[in-house]
Structure formats: C-alpha cells, structure tokens
Image 1: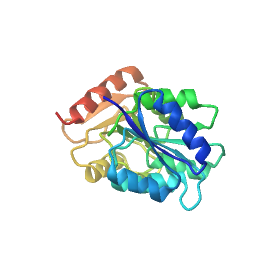
Image 2 (image 1 turned 180 degrees about the vertical axis):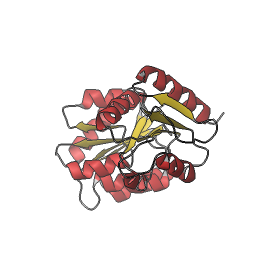
Image 3 (image 1 turned 90 degrees about the horizontal axis):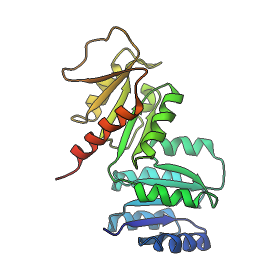
Image 4 (image 1 turned 180 degrees about the horizontal axis):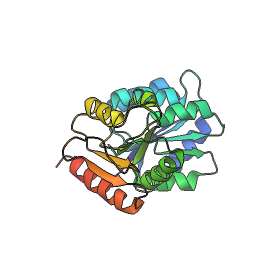
Length: 235
C-alpha cells in the first residue's frame, strides 16, 4: 500500500527537496509551509506520518503537534530542527514524537523512521528514571512506535496523546504508591497498563494487572507490546 506523508516547513526549497526524496521511495507527499495549512490538510487526508520543522512563523512545530492531536491523535510525527530548543522539544515529546532529527544531516535516518512508522502506535511511559525511559523510547522507535513520556504525576495530567498501552512505574516522586496507575485507568479506561517496579512488596493492584520486575528484559517487554498493538488494531 502506498504511504502518504505530510511535510511542513516554511523553507520552501528544503520542503520541495524533501518531497522529491520521499517521492523517490514511492510515497505520496503533501506540502504545507505553515501550521494553519498543515491542519487543513490533516483534516482532509489520512497521512501515515507527518514531518515538521520546529521553528516556523505563527505556529512552531511543538504547537502544531499539540493541535494535530486534537484532529488525528494516531498520526506519527517526526520533528526536524536545525536549532537546539530544549523547552520546545520537551513540550513536543510530551505530546508524542516518533523522532527528533537534525536537518539536513539526518535525512537518511528520516527515511528509515518513516518507513517503519505505525499509526495509533503511542505508548505512554510513566517513569521518573530518565535513563530507563530513554532506553524504552529508543526500543519503541526502532519498532515504529511512538514514546510519550511522563516522569511525574503532574506531567501525566498534561499528556494529550491517546496511547494503546501504558508502562507505569508504581513509585513516582510526587505520587503515592500506585496512584499513577489509578490515574491512568481513570484517564484511559480499557487501555492496558503494565506495571514496572523494583518494589519487593506490591500495594493492592486491580485484578489482572500485568507486572514486570526491574531490571527486566527489554526485548521481552517489546514483544508483549507488539502483541497489544496487534490486538489494538481494527480487524
């Protein structure tokens, strides 16, 4: 099946060059040179992924991503930037990014990311161990899945993406034991949550809750998420 991408960049020459590169892979590629036009196109078409610049007039890439989630919450997104803007990048990661790449150096990597990108593939990581969150995020990206991270209960409340699965630590710096799990079930009822914990004694958990003990085998966990993703897809 032919894949369709949306490229958003106010640098028209760069956008058109990237369009040609992606077309050479056999994909259909639409262009938008600002956030407003991008939102119009997302309303009109079903894309397999969006590639957006960070720094644009009127609406930057992080703001665009937040608005996109209100229209198509399952759309994989890749952020390209020639600048280091950590505050904006943190906002964008909160709303779900398949990758953050520099331009133009990482175009070959972009092609790999887009080829594997999967719609409705967001996994929420509720984990304050940033090293573990980064490891899991990279493992998910290698499978075309999107990692959305929340290192605390307060950050969890700001998540706008709709995950197909949640990985949740029982112990967060601003939450009681298992409080984050309760919030996840309340916010996304029916979405499977897998508990990750190093606790030797567990608090009471909902019946049937899956649990993995730290340290765990990341590959085994990824296989479980692959199964949950397949079950999540419409038949």
